[in-house]
Image (cartoon, rainbow, N blue to C red; front, side, top):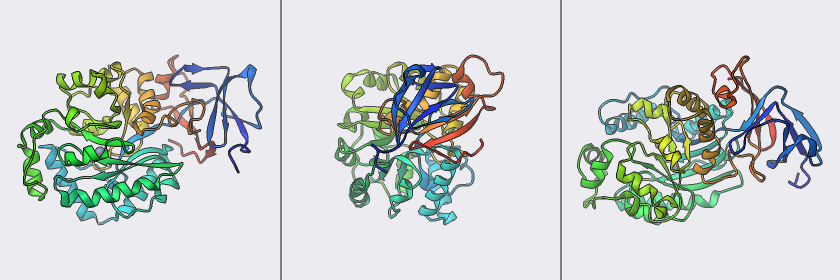
Length: 407
Ligand SMILES: [Zn+2]
C-alpha cells in the first residue's frame, strides 16, 4: 500500500502527553500509514478513515534507547565493576571469549528483549562484522553505528573500510552511521575522517582516568592498551579533545561523565556547540560504575539535549530504556519528571540523528505508547507515567497497533 492510499487513523486517548506542548486533552493524534499527520482539536478533525480508541490511556511517543550494544547481549548479568575502568574492560573481553555465543545470536537476543519491552527505536553500536543488516530492520528502527577502534593503522583501516561500506545499507527503517569508539582507543585519523559523513557517535570522557591518559599517554589506559597489544609506536597527546577530535560533523557523545569547568566552557562556545547533536546518559550503567554525579541537568539547562540509553548487558541488568527513566525519577533531585520523559523520547531522536523519532510533529514516525496510569495518581501526568505501577497498554509501531507485552 502506498503511503498516500494508507488509511488515515485517529487515535483517541484520555490525554496526549506531548514533550513540546505538555499534556493535551480534547485532541486526537492523526496518522497516515507509518507517519504522523499531526495533533488536531476534536472539533476540527481532518477526514479520517478509522478511529482507534485507547480507552483511558495516556498517549506518548515510544521511548528511544539512544545507546546500546546489542552484540554484547550474551551476558546474563552485568560484569562487576571495581578497580579501574580498564579492569572491567579486561573482564568483559575475557568473559565474552568464554561464552562462545555468536555475535548474530547476541544481537538477536538483544532485539528480542527490545521487542518485549516495546522500545523498538535504537541507537545501536555494532562492533561485529558480518551481521546481515536486515536483522535490525526487520524488528527495529533508528540508527546502527559501525564501530571503528584502534590506534594503529593495521587495526583501524580494515574496520574503517567495513564501517564506511556499511553506510550504503541505510534504509527507511534503519540508518547506518559511524562510531569511532573513543578518544583513548581510536586514532585521531579516524575522528577526522568520520567528520561530516554520517550520523556520528563516540564514547566521551567516560571514566576518571581518561583525561590523564589523553593528556599524557600514561596511566591505567596505557597499561591496558599495552597488555592487549594495541599501543602504537608513537602517541600524540590530546590536550583539547573538543577541538582536536570533533573537527566537523554533528556528534552524539555517549556518557560525558567527567566534564571539567574547561569542558563546559568549550561546550558553551558556538562552534563546539554546533558540532554536538546530543549527549547520552546511561543512568543504571553510570551507577554500576559508581561514577560522580552526571551533569545531565546542567547540560539541559545549557540547551543541549541529553538522551537516555541502557548501554549493554555487560553493565546493565536489562535493555529497557523506560527502566532508566523510572530509575532516574527515583534518584535525581535535579531533573523534573517532564524533563526525564523528554530525555527518553524527544532527545532520543536528537541523539540518533533523526528528529522524526520521539515527537508528535507532522512527518514523524508513528511510534507510540499507550500508557495506563495507576489509579489514584496525582495531577502531574509526567510523574504518573514514571510510577512503577503504571503500565504500558499499547505499542504502536509505524502506525500499526502491534503486540502488547504487559510490563
Ligand atoms: Zn557504550
